[in-house]
Amino acid sequence: MTDGFCPIHKIQMKQWTKGDRSWYSHMVAEGEWCSGGDPKEPLDRKLGAEKADTLLPVDWDAKDRQSMAQTAMKAASEVLAAMIKAGFSFEQDEINKELKDMANQYYIELKRIKDGD
Picture 1 (cartoon, rainbow, N blue to C red):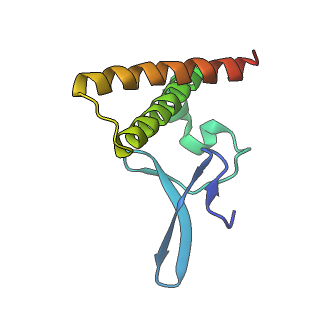
Picture 2: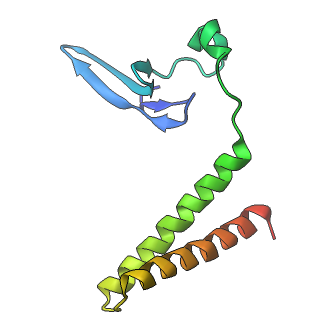
Picture 3: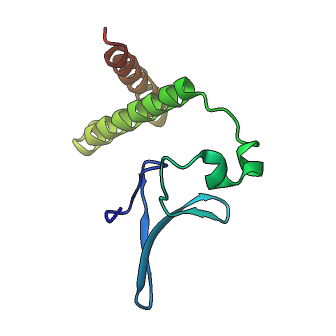
């Protein structure tokens, strides 16, 4: 794992250096760190059996919807920012409405693409 990518959490870790030592890690919870480890290691060994029992189940469908909604909102805000930069004039209430409308349209399109329609 020389690139610093965490195979467990699927994120890029930060490289740390102290003296002649160098390592990668990222924070997973307040005061707890992950250094990548072995992704095949059982979760209860990674976290300690007592912590594994307290993990809540993840609703991956909800996470997927949230991710698509965030992507849609980001795309809508970028388009709206480009329109404003290009000289289009909007009142604040128009901006809010336009942003919501565009985000909804993008979300519907992302969902259609994901579902393979």
